[in-house]
Each structure stands twice: as structure tokens, then as C-alpha cells.
Length: 358
Image (spheres, rainbow, N blue to C red):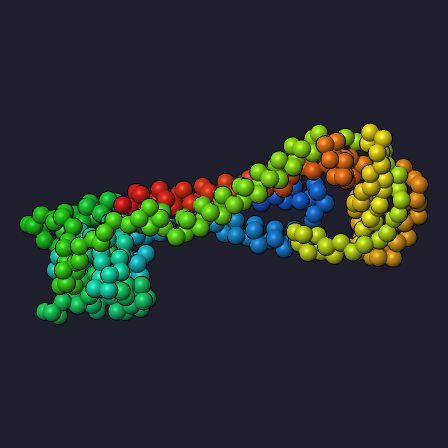
């Protein structure tokens, strides 16, 4: 905020820019971490480039918007000697002589249909008519927040969540220019557009306070965390798997589709046998060599796995029927834990936001 020759300038609050910067930085870290994981596991492919392009473009846009708004926030309001303008609300100019009064608006209103409308520290401007709000982009941005009075005047309930000043201080500054001899009315209004505001409805239930989006986010987060715990348990169990020598019984080429990005390749599948405590067990798994999109190339490598050759495998000593070339790992569990925690945290933030509003 500052005093310029054209009047008093109020720039939008920087807290929303900080939120954008935080979200952009968080998702940038997630993107770099996920890209590193996929590349280290050999899951690059076309999916990585397409996903990475959209991910990092969105991250860059959030960071650019946040940093731009933080370095030089856009104008919220301009209070000049001739009137007031709200560039962020698409209202260019309202002469002081056009404003009959200003008062605090209610944060929650209920219309005749029983629908609740929530505002953030609103102000109600009493205007001679709706002319300043019916020109240009203001006609679209202010519709639904204006009302005509029986005497031909109008009221506009405007949001102040982007204002760097408390609503009461902005009220005082407008009132000082409209009518310096009159003290600001700091009591929330009981009417809007000449219609008495209905009393608040019965208190919302617990789920109503959280909000539908918060409920969905928490449920999704819990489900993902349950899946992550299952994957983590398998990984912990995989630490007890024993490395053992096995004998190849049969080798074949099979079509393999990656679960993540649906790329098709050809792999060598080996049937093998191994011995545990004198008992012979049989297993089957995709070998980690010769993963290629050309079938003829992979078929040509079958000679590297003749029946009777030894191969190293891992098996579960508590259940030897479970075996593979590599034991289960916790790579997927880490991703699921992070995603589940993110959704759960997002749901908690929504809940806290509703609590603060209430």
C-alpha cells in the first residue's frame, strides 16, 4: 500500500501468492522425486515425458503466478479524490457522490429458498443505481451480489478476502470519504436489498462442517494409506526372503504390458524349480533381461536360457510357493504413503478451513 499522485493504492494480499508458491514448490519436489524414481527403475518411456511435461508446466505456472503476485501484487482497490475503483473485482470507477453509504455485510446469508451463501468479511455499498456495476466485465463479476431497493437505489455486497486491510479498516476509509461526519457502522447488516436476512439454519452435522470435498479427500487418503500399508508389509516380508539356486525348466517369450503407462513389450518368462528342505518347488517369473518392443529380438535371446541351466531366485521361507527373481520392495509403498498423506492432509486443511470460517 502507498500514496501515489492518483490516490491511495491498495494491493492484493500476498498470502494467496505465498500459497501458490508453496504449492508450486511442493509439486516441483514431487515431480523431481517421482521422475528420479521412474528413471532409476527403468520406467521412463513416453509416459514419463508426457506426464513430466504437463506436471512441470503446471508447476512452473503456479510458481510464476505466485512469484509475480508476491513481488508486485496486483491492485485490489484505488481510492482517489474522485472515487474508488476495484480492478481485482473488474469494477473500474465508482464516484464518491454515487456511494450513499457503506456497512459491514453478514458472513453467512440464507436466501428465500434456504440456500446458504458464505462471504469473507464482505462490505455492502449502497449505490444510487447499478450503472457502475453494469459496464464491461463488472456486469459478469458482480451479478448475483447486487440487489435493487424499492426506491431505485441498489446495494452491492463485495468480497474483501483479497484486501490487504481488515474489512473494518477499509470500511472506515470509504466512510471517511463518503461522509466524514458519520461513524462507520461495524455491526453486521441484517438486511440486504431491502429484504431481511433469514436467521441461520440449524447447526450443520459433523460431515456438513467438513464439507463434501473434505470427506472425499479423507476417504481417498485413508484408502491409499491402507494400500500403502499392505505394500509396505509385503516389502518387510520380502526382507526375509532367501536367495537360492534354481534350475531352468522352460523358457518362453510373453507379451508384457506395463501397469503404469500401458507400454507393450516382450519379455522372457522362465519356469524353474528349486529345493527347500528336501522338497522340490516350482516357480515362474519374468526375467529382468531382454525387455524389448521387438518380439523377434527377444525370441533370439532364448538360447541364453537353455533348460537345465542354473539361475538365482529368491523365495519366502515361510511359504516357498512364493518366489521371484527379486523380492518385494517398498518403492510403490513410498509413493502410496506420500499420496495418501497428501489427500489426508488436504482433507484436514478443508476441515480446519470450515472450522475457521464458522
